[in-house]
Length: 301
Image 1 (cartoon, rainbow, N blue to C red):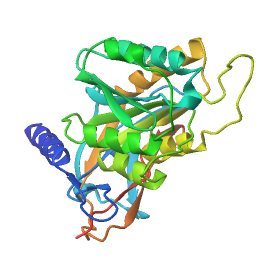
Image 2 (image 1 turned 90 degrees about the vertical axis):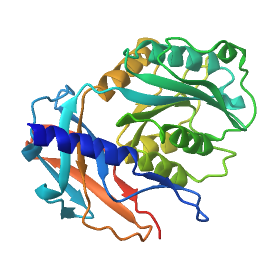
Image 3 (image 1 turned 60 degrees about the horizontal axis):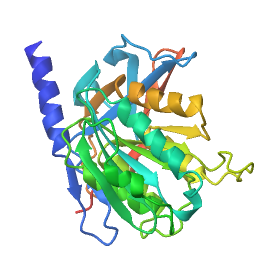
Image 4 (image 1 turned 90 degrees about the horizontal axis):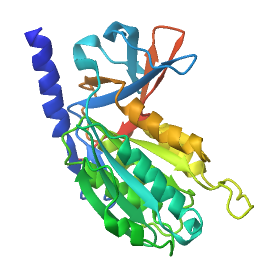
């Protein structure tokens, strides 16, 4: 028991110091290869969270090679606290939807537990912090003066959220996006945005507002990037919610973040070559499915 607790504490400490900022031409956050932390969402065929699984119920693969049991530093299932950054799209294309998006952000904040914290950012032609990390249940007064305008810097907003989460001590991190999904003005590419989130272990939960009814019309889907962000980081994509569906989406996101298995391991490949390393986690039980991030970018020398 003492050894298990020691390994868990050691893995948490190493994971919290595993982030570093590359100063190369990509300017992308990269992870140290000492420890890789995976947050797993495990559900049955009905979509219910599965509890009571053991480490032996999972197999982890990096670049197709199974991770050895002796390389695993910790394994746990706990309702741990999490840190989240909410990204509100305030670009011109969101003009008729921004009030709904702001209300949805309030709904998410209202679902925070006492130990959880969240920060809020807006993004249009620039990315701007609305409020710092706190356990508050409402938006800062300045959020109610925001008017939708300008272009869309979605990718830059994700990178900024990752930078903000990098210094947080929580093992569970999330980026919650409310947007119509079309980036038009970012300096960062979508690949850089994904890598930034992966580097800090943040799952992206993307809420697509592109097809919400506005004045009797419906837009064509433009949120393929939102879905890709969610899939690659092990988060969830919510397609065009409205009314109760929007409320339930944010209740579900908060609930999921509190019911994940966490596995950390030390990869055998410690080469600092800047290459992408794919990750896959398989459950030994056929009646459950596992969702987690798809990989990570190794650091460069």
